[in-house]
Image 1 (tube, rainbow, N blue to C red):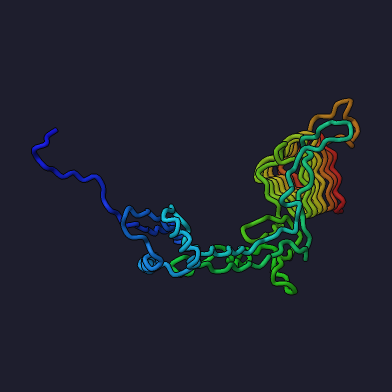
Image 2: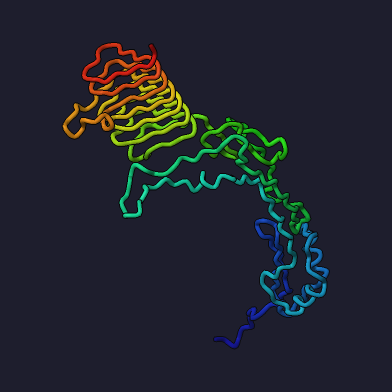
Amino acid sequence: HTTSESFEFEIGEQRDATCEITLSDDMMQAYLTLTPNFGGRHVTLSDVQKLLQANGIVWGIVSTEEIEAVLAEEHVSEFVIAQGFEPIEGVDTQFLSLIAEIEQNERKPLVNEDGIVDYRELGDIVVVHKDTVLVHRIPPIKGEDGRNVLGEIVKPNGGDDIPFSGDQKGVCINPENENQLVSTITGQPVLVPHGMIVLPVLTVKRVDLLSGNIRFNGSIVVNGDVKEGMKMFALEDITIEGNVFNSRIECMGNLVIRGSVTGNTELLAGGGVIVKGGLQGYSKTELQKDEEHAAKIITRGSVCIGYAENFVIEAGLDIVIDKYSMNNHLMAQNK
């Protein structure tokens, strides 16, 4: 706006090219970023090499030819100038159950050929016999070390050598194969972390529609009641802490019921029968005249009960009734 005064005004500047190196968080990649020059000096191979050295990058650097090709472009963003290599992950010890039923044993109501559903019949409980191979231990696979662009060793994850569980109830390590667990008894297999145990006694809270009928090749303990219409069978003893309602209980050993027994219940045992409470069967009607449908106890051993009413009791040895007997059929073979 004036011609009488001189002035200066900056309309441009000379700039040198710049280069920058950044590292990934895991130090596995180094990135080169180039900014072009404006009338200034270019970035040289020596500049890049010094920058790499200043950042401690010594591993996985690309070839000199590749760096020079990038420098010729004069402008690049996050060019991978160095690349580490990832470790190869190992595989921890694995434990393979050889009892397929134990993982697939989802007990479901039985549906017969007519399509009728029996909600009490949920299928058998898994049982294994002595010397059965239960679990196979697959040894670990060791991983391989990696290395980042700083030259540091990166250790792999996994590859842990895990022994069998220290809880070895009813099982032992196979003397012929240290990577196998075998059962030492006949019983119910139960998965535990890093192995399996075998229980000689099956314990349930109660026997009802949720548990289904129970058959077990060992002993059974019921911590509660046996509900109406249920069935139980054991190759050994049965102990019931609660009451039994109109059900069928059979075992090859001793049968102990802490509570009472009611309804047309059948108790069958190879050993003795003890009912701490008593027996209260239904009174016989015209439809129940025959003893086949009556409440009954049949055992090869002795019977010891608190009281009995409307029951058929046949014992291979003695019958002992603490309080009273009313309207029963009693037969003891011990003379």
